Length: 89
Image 1: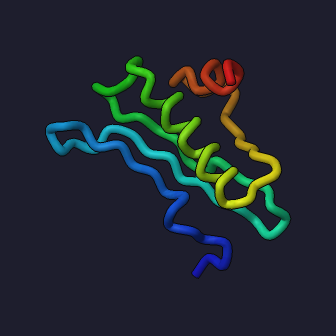
Image 2: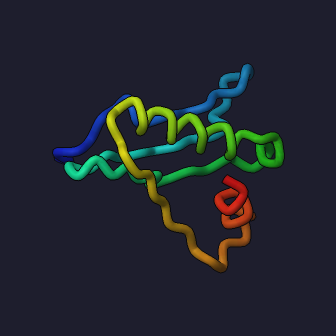
């Protein structure tokens, strides 16, 4: 049981074929700090802008939920290009 869990902060992108394509899981803590906890795009759907779209959608949901700040962390050695995406925002 997670006291700060809000299902409206779980975002999933489904392709027209019904295939799971991308996700963004966010959390808002009691200090109104939002966290992008998980963000990912499935192979085959990368390099289409879904990661950036999901990131902005997550940030928007956090703002609507009352976040005054949003944070995320990433492995600096990530081979997925995530660091480049986050730095672009």
